[in-house]
Image (cartoon, rainbow, N blue to C red; front, top):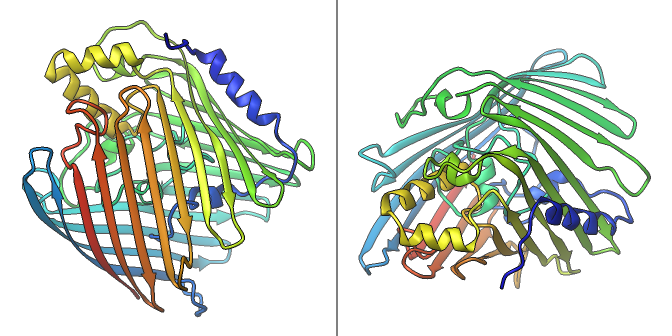
Length: 424
């Protein structure tokens, strides 16, 4: 019989990792990019510009569970601008346009994602204020981020299963954000207002209904407690649920291993209730992602990550959902995919990144994820070769499991894609 785990068990997982703290904190932004360099421009030395971008052509095909094969093609344009408009004032713009055949949904082939568009005022070296659409990304884990509160319904166009791509290529939320820095710590406060009711699938819609369909706020504080630990605490609130508490912490063990832990908890409805397929009473729920990253001397980086979410169905509930109403099962899967939440309670992931693997300029990335409730799996691998301003990449993904399992029920059983990217 499987042991039951609740919020206190999740907190014990956090405490166990925090007990390992023994060295300086590793930057959170580096952890977000630990898996893949696919969205970064070539690292060759060149003059720093206010803007950068790329055009990409991708060709491939996917195989459905019934064995049918469908070809797919994609053209993408990505632009990022970060420029000074006046003393202490910056303007930031990030936009992506994907044109897909066949269409991702309905008859719409074009999907535009306005990732960021905001102005920033640096009142002093310690005080900053931003206003506009901002892609706020929180968390130290690689595959699942419980404290990434602004991720839900933010992805308009899925071009890769790489977690780094999903975090970068998504809609930002309209907000006012202030930041205060001091020696050994920082405070970030933001408010994101309700603008629209419903999400839009129109090609060039700013889609405020996806990211600003309710009032939300966030407080994030980091403070160096000792020379060896600087955790980050978060408070998050929205119209639809009580305040959630979050924690992020990392540490370097030795010269090559990073331990990380990420936790979010608070009163909330279960995911089945949020998806509208049950009427369970609200309760305290915890979400955890914890693991370790080892980097070898040859730059090979391996991350083993365990993710736990007790707001998701347990194994018995998941089995009942699979055997029950197909409509309820489909509604829940759509909700979990849009919210980027774990559909069941336990997931184990292995993430590998190897820059300059075997030969210089060849990067290899691997992602293996297993659902512990139904033993389904997804396997994703990418090989990417860099020239000075051009990338050539090959991606392959294989989903396996029972016909109604987490990964086995995906509409694509196998996906391969080759892409050519030109930076400008």
